[in-house]
Length: 149
Image (tube, rainbow, N blue to C red; front, side):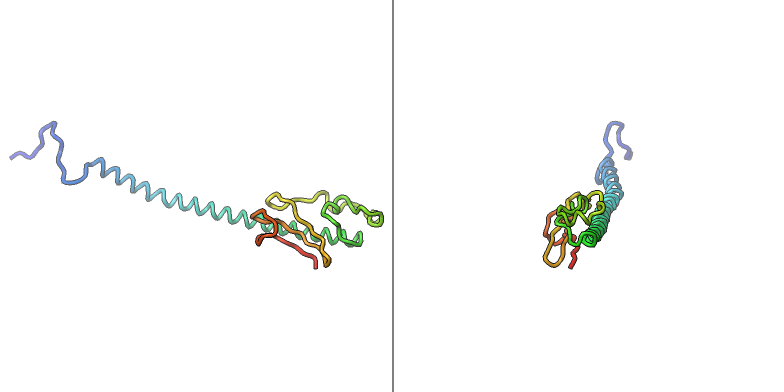
């Protein structure tokens, strides 16, 4: 008995055709390679965002501390705190304050790391300088604040 197939007759197998097996092997190999790469890239992006947020907070805290010291310097020079942060650049508006004014304390008032203006408030017991923080909304839990009390 001859078990060889005739020349134009397909080979019979007891399972999936070879092309389906090869396709399945290629898909599994692709998944084994791609899933970890995508996971590493995604987690790396999350880590990058976290580091960037942390850096923005630190830079803004340093800027707030500098502004606080500049307001204190203004207070020492003039005898009172400025009514707004622009007075650190322009000087006092009253004649008594102008007579004590020597030069600008800063060239310009910067912004926080999210490109927002600082909010400066004079209070009865001192002053407060506030950054809206990461959410860029003022008076929320993530605000960065320095106070003089």
